[in-house]
Length: 328
Image 1 (cartoon, rainbow, N blue to C red):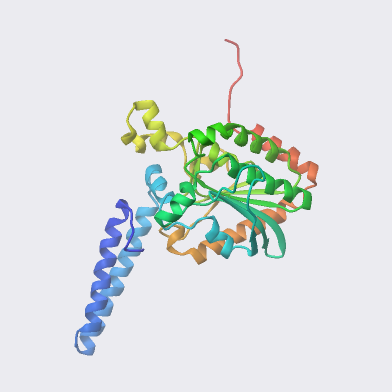
Image 2: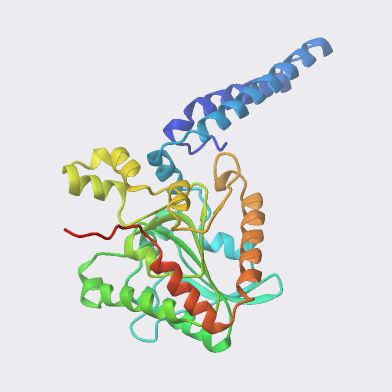
């Protein structure tokens, strides 16, 4: 648990860990006999076990709103964190060849084990300067046009595509609308549905609205355990339904935005387990688990012919949702 930045529901664990740290510092500074040292170490070990048990209890019973907060955690790994660890030889490619480069979408060629792939994903920032540069992970139309340019390149080169979703949504500014935000998203969805190469989607943080779906049409949709995927943010939903954004916790529950809910509804294909406390607590373990899931999915998809990939992808999305037929 990182003491510098924590969520409200993590406070009991943080307080225990602070107490453990104080005991450690006291033990180092005090001149006590060996019996006292053993006693102090025993107390530290006991409190450490209590802290881990408390953390396990908290994280096994998170509400959808708490998971939403965790998906937005400022220390959570972003797309470029994974490109540096999951892949090798990543070469970033820029620009949509039409207007400009959009830093809210990053992409390029990389190696997954011994397999060349095209990697594309939303990118948020950590510092204030980076957040402004990346537009808080909210792409403009040129970002989506860059993404589809890279996907089309991947198809020409016959290389699989891996996308990482982590955005509150597409940028709703006037300039974005003037340059065709809705058209760019719609075209991406159409083109992705027809690409004749394997496509693996991974929701690593927030999967918000059409801004997520614009790079979210694929053969396998994976979600990290504490990520979210929804047509609208809980705050936006609450503002529309109740004219009160403070009811976001109620909206989060109703929207079924968690990985468990979406897996049960057969909207996603696999939940990737996160380290205790979230992906940011142990990035190396998270990286290893994610890489194993990607390699496994890619090996499975490579067994299909290009035409079978398109047919199966079409069938996959046609089956999403349930309805009843009847006479009125």
